[in-house]
Amino acid sequence: MTRRPASVTVRVPAKVNVQLAVGGPRPDGFHDLANVFLAVGLYDEVTVTPLASDVGDPTAEEPRITVAGPDAGQVPADASNLAARAAVALAARHGLEPRVHIHIVKDIPVAGGMAGGSADAAGALVACDALWGTGASREELLAICAELGSDVPFSLVGGAALGRGRGELLEPLETGGTFHWVFAVADGGLSTPEVYRECDRLRGDAAVPEPEASPALIEALRTGDAVALAASLANDLQPAALSLRPSLAATLAAGTEAGALAALVSGSGPTTAFLAKDAESAHAVAGALAASGTCRTVRVTTGPAQGATLL
Ligand code: C5P
Image (cartoon, rainbow, N blue to C red; front, side, top):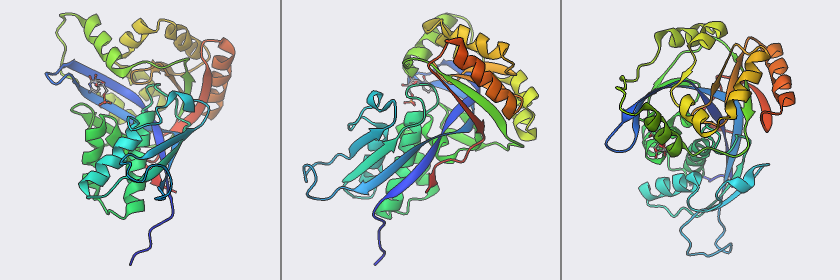
């Protein structure tokens, strides 16, 4: 008989969208995307432990969720948490009870446009698979990820990838070096559906082209050329995020004035992302952003980062 581990911890990265090209709304309410993801080195850690039969309600079919970290209070600690839904989805496919305690140590900004919730879902899935010995294939894990959310498959694979469809159909991309990033975390979150709705509203009746990945951007990732990457960064959701949160314009300006090669809203925001020439410049940009009073906290990191990894 195989011995099962007492607990499993998985580390999962945040992401920034270096290109987010958004098509018109689809009949299912989603938008077709050309979504170029880059995983960056801010991580959540997800630990799963079997729920002892004498803890809580022994007939309960829901995982127990606890969250630690400065913004833990903003994360739902119930069955609606995407990490709990991941455990339930894997258990259902394998005829198991999801009697598991999921503990999340949160370092990725909450509701910030950096896929923190998606990261926790991918982490819980990989961790439960190891804890329960389900031996799910990569394809099965990716299929469950896609059911859970558009960004969840990327949290599993990490690195850099082009996401098509609603972002879940991934094509890995080559990266030729390390990119230096600064992230300015804003007060409060933005709702992703609201930002997409605002994007549609701002576009009105204008014709929306098919979203296409930029060849120049993919080449810049491949060669590790930060200056070329900076020239190609693009986020179609940025006007919508700025319309809902006009104060982000001052944050973007503060980072650019401090020497960032380029600045953009991360995904649906409100976190803003600054690409720097090197580590030294990243620290200078971070210092200026922190002093500018235009954001809550500042983080310095690099990308690409590894996807969900068993610790
Ligand atoms: O897939 P996920 O649950 O993360 O998406 C959250 C919301 O963001 C969707 O309900 C939808 O309103 C919006 N969305 C979209 N098009 C996408 C991805 C997300 O409209 N490609």
